[in-house]
Length: 325
View 1 (tube, rainbow, N blue to C red):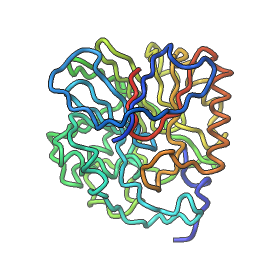
View 2 (tube, helix red, strand yellow; view 1 turned 90 degrees about the vertical axis):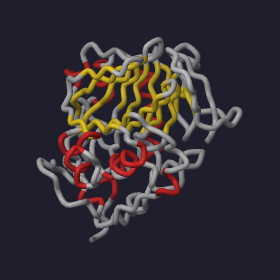
View 3 (cartoon, helix red, strand yellow; view 1 turned 120 degrees about the vertical axis):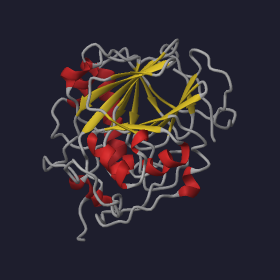
View 4 (tube, rainbow, N blue to C red; view 1 turned 60 degrees about the vertical axis):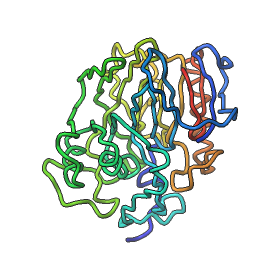
């Protein structure tokens, strides 16, 4: 395949413990993660309200431990090299699941939430589902792709937005959303899967497949909104009012008023956490690697949040660091 400029094609866009409260960050400041005492992923044995931690896995990926349950959002740990960050993007890059990277980090999972099915959000999901028995929620495309990988239909749940899923000590509200556009007003690998395809072999076999957001509400804990791409259907956000928003970095100005519409729609969250700003084709090691153009965009995003929502705190996360909101 010919080399493509990665900006025109796609980008829309254990370890340490840190404590974050909605009032515990410096007002108006971007607060990076700070290393504390190294800690392994928690393995609690008793469920209790409010016992919840959030660990960023790069891109839009998260591990959320809620007492004895684990929710994963867009878990992409293989971080394969497609040439996206070197200007030599290869759409025929083979999908290679790095079990040596995944297995030490995914000891368990009860639920997997998929925002959309591009490779940097979905390609590790089927392996994780079969390894852990987790139930996978996503679009109809995610459902059919899961079947293509041999995930049992009993573990796959198709959602489209509007559903409120009750898990006892937490709930998940599914929100219809949109994928961002590149400078050419298009997006990578558009399309959906309305029936089971052959098992995907390359990154081009994983289309966007429509895009969702998810609002996680924890009993006695925070409400957190997860995005996987940098566009927004703000009318779908009415009444969500999360405490925390995980917000994907915008890479082009073709989506008008992205941050103003998103933050207003979410009623100006107390904490804003940028995601999808890292070079996700490198090892998962701190500090997160950021391309120079993305660093400029990240700084611009932080400044914009300060201006649009001055009462919000901005937390720039580090990999695998446990945050408690």
